[in-house]
Length: 239
Image 1 (cartoon, one colour):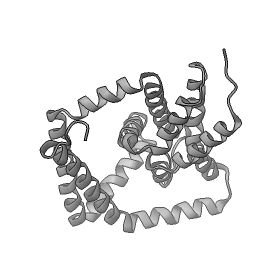
Image 2 (tube, helix red, strand yellow):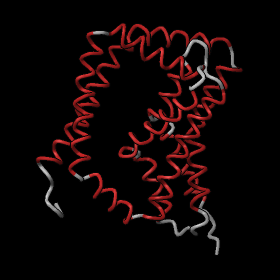
Image 3 (spheres, helix red, strand yellow):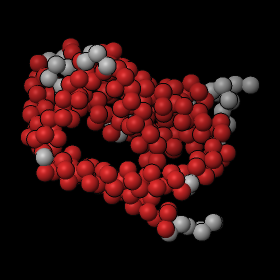
């Protein structure tokens, strides 16, 4: 029997989706792609946003349907020693890379920007953007608090199993709408939008390399610290 979806629930889900639309994967990376001087093709941006929305949707369905079993399995896998060693290695590499980026600011910034320009216009761009979207979604799995809150609300709302997937799909669509709106503004909006993006791109060229080194360093430290803590200072069961 179908259960009527409460308007308050719908508004709450929409609000959480809008908050989720401001994450790194759903807003900041799309803006960075839009900053490419040649712009980004509609198909490329839709590929990126569609992939990240699909990743969120799959995670949401898994959590709603599988619930505790999936969480338990994920916890066991994530606590395995080989995986933690690999995570520690990734963190150390990222941290070391931040110093390389700082010492070679111009070369690092040029390489990153060249990759972006190839991704948004080159022949293999769709594959590159798909991979970037998957990485962005995976990186945000542990911090997608608004989405987890939305899933919790749906799980306790006495919805039928057939109502959850459409709600999750709608959530993911709302989540990527701001990035789509920015793309449409650049393509069809007033000329001042292009000028603003051009100034942002100039700022990225001059200051973005320093920010990149800091972000790599911070991310590397956090990833390595988490792995080291679980390798050498594991929490006791039930603690």
